[in-house]
Amino acid sequence: MIVFNLLAGALLLLTGFLSVYLRNAVHAALALAANFVVMGTVYMVLQARFLGWVQIIVYAGAIMVLFVFVIMLLYAAQAEVGVDPLPWMRRAAAGVALAGFLALAYAFSAARSALGDKAATALLQGGTARVLGPVLWDEWRYPVMLVAALLFVATVAAVALLRPGRGTA
Image 1: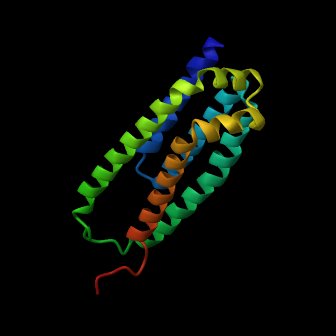
Image 2: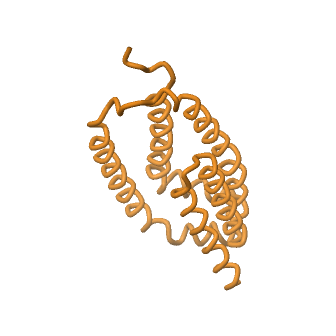
């Protein structure tokens, strides 16, 4: 088990690092998909089979297809991108990112105290949807919604900023 933990931790760190630092966006998305698969495997080893399969099917499958589609859409528009049309947007984005981070940190810290016994019970019962549903939608409702909103806003902003035909002429 120790060997698996070390290998899984090393793979998670490596694929996370690659997904951030690879220059090619498609390669970075593939590294992120590999990260999702390794994380799903870790969930399954921890006897949370439902979470493991959801991680692999939903995130490594459906969400990554969406990301690759958006990346390909943006690559089609990349030839038309020139000077930064909104130079002040970096500071505004940094402020919104900081506010979002603080909101997520508060939501997770508030929900963490109530999670203890319920998470142990969910783990012992195999991580089924019946056990995890009330945990996710009672104590963890706001963190889940904040993460969903963050992903939605990031995708819409990427497409809106780099859509074809947005020239100043």
